[in-house]
Amino acid sequence: MSEHIALIWKKLDHLGRMRDYLSYSITQVTALLPIQNWQVLQPDQHETLAAFRIRFSEYQEHMGKTMKAVAVEEEKPSEPFTAVLLYMEKLGCIDSVDRWKDIRELRNGVNHE
Image 1 (cartoon, rainbow, N blue to C red):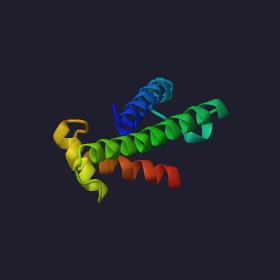
Image 2: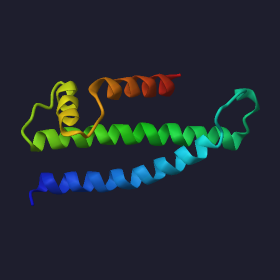
Image 3: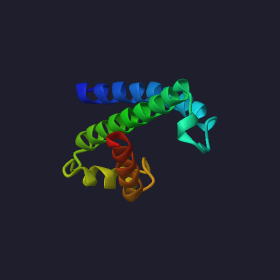
């Protein structure tokens, strides 16, 4: 196995652990929904929302890096990143390029707000 393939496996293993943490955060956040009044949230509830935001953001970031590594290994275009997304959509790894980009924009909006 090449070093690059071993690195991809390591990234996939890391994503698996991150997914478990993200699933836990989703369960915690779901219990808070729907949020009617943000002013009455307790500090631990704000912390739960922050943990979800950070975990989701990091998961998507690492997933993007892993997808790019796979494209490079498969000798597919890796620039611009849309080329990677198109390849991942073709493989069935993501639903659609547009959905990925919409989620990314939402994530960026929340992180910069």
